[in-house]
Every structure is written in C-alpha cells, then in structure tokens.
Image 1 (cartoon, rainbow, N blue to C red):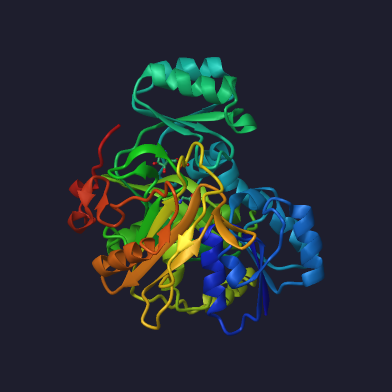
Image 2 (cartoon, rainbow, N blue to C red):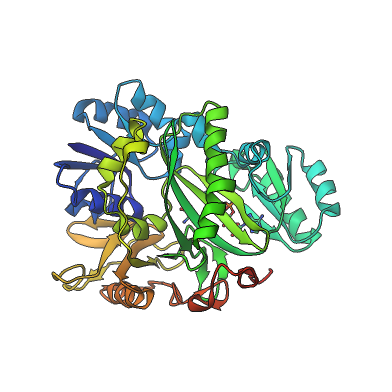
Amino acid sequence: MKVLVVGGGSREHALCWSLRQDPSVEKIYVAPGNAGTALLADNLPIAAADIDSLVRHARELRPDLTVVGPEAPLCAGIVDAFGRHNLPVFGPARRAAQLEGSKVWMKEIAQRYGIPTAEARSFDDPREAIAFSRGFPFPQVIKADGLASGKGVFIATDFTQSRHAIAALMERRLYGSAGHRILIEAFLEGVELSAFALFDAKQYTVLGFAHDYKRIDDGDRGPNTGGMGAFLPSPLVSPSLLRQIEQSIFSRLHAACLGEKLDYRGVLYAGLMMTREGPFLLEINVRFGDPEAQVLLPTLGTPLSEIARAVCRDDLGDLRLIRHPLSVVGVVIAASGYPDNPRLGDPITISESAGSGADRQGTLFHGATKRDQGSLQVAGGRVFTAVGWGDHLAEARRQAYAQVDTVSFPGMHFRKDIAAFLAGRPVGDLSADPPALLSHRP
Ligand code: AMP
Ligand code: GLY
C-alpha cells in the first residue's frame, strides 16, 4: 500500500519509521518531511497547511491511507477535503477537530458530558474578563480560545499578571484571532499525563500513556515549549487509575462525539491533570503528541497501517492491539534560542554510530532539519528527538542519552532530567498514591 504522511517534525519522522517496518507498506510520501524522512520516504515540497495542494497531489498519487501529524490541517478540514475525493484519512473531520481548535467549545462539551475539568468562564469582552478575574481565586489560568502552537496559556498568580495576560490576548492580539475569546479557569494542582486513545464511529480503545516535559529547562524552569522530552510507561497508571480514566474521560468523550454527531476517526490525545480528586481534563488534542508519538510508536506491535485502516473502517472492535512491554525515553534536542527565537542555519554533525548496529535500542528522529547543498542544517526550533528503549526506564534513558551524544551543532540544548525527575520528584518515587500527586504551585 501507499501512505501519505502530512507534517515535517520528529513526530512525522517517527510515523514514517513505524510505517517503514510494516511489510504491507510499499511506498511512503511525506509532505513536507525533513532531512530524516528523506531517507525513508519521498519528501513532497508541500506545506502541511496547504490543503489545496495536498488534495491535488493526493488525487494523482492515490495513497491508500493518509496520516496527518499536526493540528492545523485537521482544524482546517483536510479530512473533509480528502473525503470528497474518496481518499481515506486517519484523523477527525473539521468540526470534530474543533475539540482542539476551540478551548471554549471543548470546555462546553466537557461540562455537558460530565467530564471532570477545571471550573471556567469564557469571555469575548476584555472588561468583563478583567472584572471576573479580580474576584476569582488565584492562581488562575488564562487561555486563548484558538490555536496558538501551545503558547496561548498563561498561569497568573495575581491580578497584575492576569490583567497583563488578558490585555496581551484580547487587546494586543498576541496570537491574532485565537485571542478573540478567552477562558479563565481554576488552577489545578497535580501531575500531568498525556493519554491516547483510538476513536472510530463505534467505539474507542486506549492506546497508551506518556509523560511530556513542557518547560525548556531542567527542573521545569523557563518558558513553555511544544515538549522537550517524554517517557513511558507512566508510574502513575495503575489498573484502577486506568479504569477511572476510561470511565470518566474516554468513554464520556466518545459519548460526546456520538451525541454531537462528530466524525472522529483517529487518535485522541487527552491532556490530563492527575489530582487528589482523580483525573481532570485539561485539553484535547486531535492527533498524536510530539514528542509523545516518538515514545509511543516504538511500543506498538500491531502495524500502524493496520490500526489506521481499522479506525477508518470503524472496525476498532476487531483490532487486536499488540503493545510491547517496553520502557521508552525521548529527549528533544532544540536549537539555540528556542522557544522564542530559534537560530536557524547552524550546521549539524551526526556521528556514524547514530541509529546503526543490529542490537540497537534507540534511534534518532529528525525534526527541524534540512539539507542545503548536501550539508545538514538546523531549520527550526525542535531539531531532533533522541529515543532509547529497554526493559527498564534506566536502560531506556541510557540509550536515549547515548543517541543525544551522536549529535552536535552550535548552541544545541536538551534537558538532562527526562525520565529521571517528574514534577520535582524522582520518577522512582511516584505512584498512583494520592499524596504523590502534589506538584509545586507557581
Ligand atoms: P493546555 O494547552 O490547555 O493544555 O494548557 C497548556 C499547559 O498549561 C498544560 O499542559 C498545563 O501545564 C497548563 N495548564 C492548563 N490548564 C491548567 C489548569 N487548569 N491548571 C493547571 N495548569 C494548567
Ligand atoms: N507534546 C504536546 C503536544 O503535542 O501538544
């Protein structure tokens, strides 16, 4: 079969890598891809958000399956556009993708279907938002309604900060129309968990869990990023917690998709806060996480093409999902100046040992890399994800950092504490025990 992958980050390199191991996949196209995907697939020079060009090319290439990495094309309706030409896509239709595209709507859905989530109010008038904020307990979380590449969320510890965040989003329009409406919500204390499930029109199946590291620096310091590392398995997810997450989050989200007549055939990523009162839904993403995909995909024993085809045909009920009981660690290597102002064009060297060897327990996924007249260069903020796996987290971590050591470029930055510490505690000390779910307040 022929598969088209849409996107150009490390997540999409991991998707291509996973598809490459699948004997039923003869050909992979990726749009636009990166210097790493070029070794596994045919890179097409089309931006992920350019739906018209993607449709045009797909009508010629006739992929049997398209897998969409990033949220922007999903929210812009790539699934609907491909569907009009009978091109099967793994992903939600435009209206369903608004579960990620509008945080206000997502909150309404959570409230309507009884999904635990932080108390919140929405505003389209900055004066009303300011008046509400003054009387609402701190810390409070101020969120732009629309897509802002993970940057439209501010945690305010006092009124000066919340006033500033409201002005930035609603008056100065820091993220354009994404800040036309905002949410002000209660701050939840706990440990975050990324939870993944497959959704088709009939049912859902839990795919797995991972922990993501959002801040740029060790010890969860510095600004938020798209994600600086991830690992699994989660030390928090006991069988009883899994049942709780299924009952209070995924089964209600699936009921919401049915109740609201949303066409959702793809992966749903629930951003959860594990609190003393149980799991709360922070956000919905309508796609694989990045870097979570890079640690999740190596654990799948069932080929991705088989999973995606089952989802597209509403056959999840018949899918036998095999997961390897592996520990996997992913460490993101970022460009100098990321996240605010990544420096582009730095030359990259990768040592010969990278990703080679029959007994290897790791690999290097390219993100923002490109080749310019043969030489490898930094082309954006998150440049690589170094991934390692093993029977235990310590081994996976060792393998991941061994992969980091194969890369070198000026100003490269990575966190040293991935899978060692989580929410300020050694990972080995964490359990589903409620007292362990306390994190530091801002
Ligand atoms: P979101 O895009 O809504 O997931 O928000 C981005 C990040 O902000 C999350 O990953 C959390 O770290 C943090 N966050 C969002 N909502 C809350 C909340 N209600 N309480 C505490 N932290 C939050
Ligand atoms: N790692 C967070 C995200 O993919 O949104």
